[in-house]
Image (cartoon, rainbow, N blue to C red; front, top):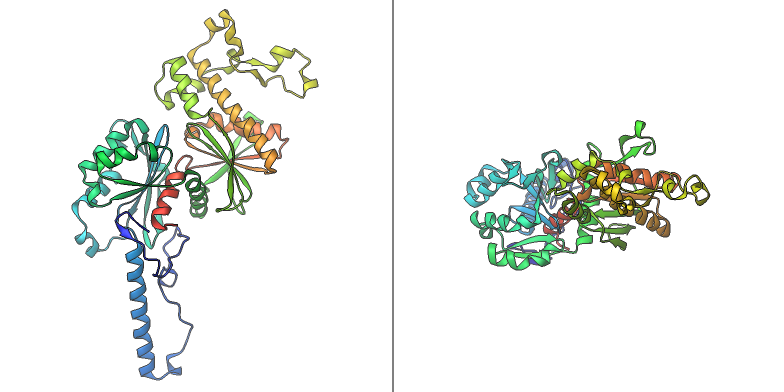
Length: 432
């Protein structure tokens, strides 16, 4: 398969398909040769010398084969979503003096630009706290960087790539998400780049499992909230995602997709909903005048949703227990807004909080039904809707625990919305 300016030769040896976080010994490196222990005294001197020469020549040949199948730098993976573009970039740290001399200035310029900044323009952000250091990928050791910017700023990204002559280094980028199809023409005309479009759900599953496997050696990637139904004692705890199958994977971006995952290659999309992060932000912009996700969340954190919503006790009075419902549960989202006096008394913060609760409760309700139907007790929530959104995570943890009587555990991942981009990067390095 040919893309990214290199030809994969299926006749060469297979490389290690499971990258490790720590540098491996030469015996574990792709293309190395393992010999059974043998004393040189057991063989004639000439035979031993000849054997060593043959072994060294074989090792050099296989290492050269690995280099030929390895794509040229820079290594990127992209997930172009409806709201955000997620980009992962691998920065090699084991560059030799010879390689540095051979590097073209364009490559050095791109590496300096991406790694020396934490902000790009007005909206691009490198999430420094998510950086993974000393990662070994495709036989190279380096740092993995996580960058995001709004999808509507993609033209500026393409102009940057054009100004740095990115197409002289690559002809094709590995990308996933709906935007990989929507903006394919823009990449071609504005940056002289082709997109190798990848299945979004394949990349998501592959990225989640890979990141969890490499991060679990240090600080935990996966976590949950202990005592979610007790606000005074609700504490975040690490969770070891060992033997993860089966699991329900809930990806909350602009919309929501829910997957039942039985192995890395065996999964199905159970259902989804159009009411996701895009709905929350869009309605908040409409109702409150805010313009960013962070601003909407800040408003929500200072609001009170009960001023906007009708609760079970508001409708059923004291007789709600016969329906098996708690009085505090929302019976009608925005139900109080049908009354003029209620509309006049609510704040923008109340509206933002009610919108957050509405979207989150809907996702939680659908997820619980899917878990019951699929007979799965472990639920992993990912996606950029959960970025800096502890309110929604605690609501989801509460809902899963309460409505399932403790049978369902809500799990979350530190790298939230970057898994699709990671899956695209892995496809670049190990084409299917």
